[in-house]
Length: 229
Image (cartoon, rainbow, N blue to C red; front, side, top):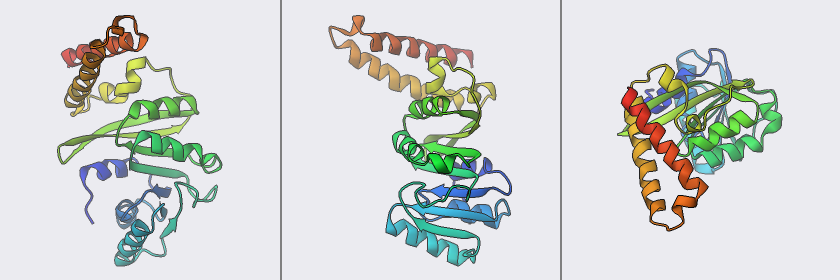
């Protein structure tokens, strides 16, 4: 089985020997690949819908891995018992959905050592939630697939350093580690926030609006970052 660039990047953050929960697993491509390549020996693949669970079972059966990967239908981590896993992957969902799943799974997260998250949008809210709830972003990477750039975030239990406000938007580690997709992604963010800023400027109240001033600072920082690369 071959993974696309997005899931390949997610897989690179899964520790060897991890007990994995793959939430919203769809076809169970990730746990199958990790097991076939000897990274893990146990996984729970969960999904809220019957169709993806059936597809996951079919993938696992074809790979002959029914003894190592269990499929469970449930809402987020509701199908996982505390202590069954030490690593949780939630990929391919919006940040608000990911946060909702994590907020409802405190007993499972008490026994979880690592979160590997791939939000489809609004990663700023996810970083803020992690920081506020005792998780530190230890790794971040960008992956490009089908002309879209994705953010992959790995977090561990630990108090994190305080972020600058713009770092919740951009991430911190991609800049430090000179991610090859950094400039392209910053250009996308800059364009997006410039558009929002121009829309706000159409309002007569924009100049006195705190949110408008925050956007001004953010756009200026993004443009500064782009010039430094």
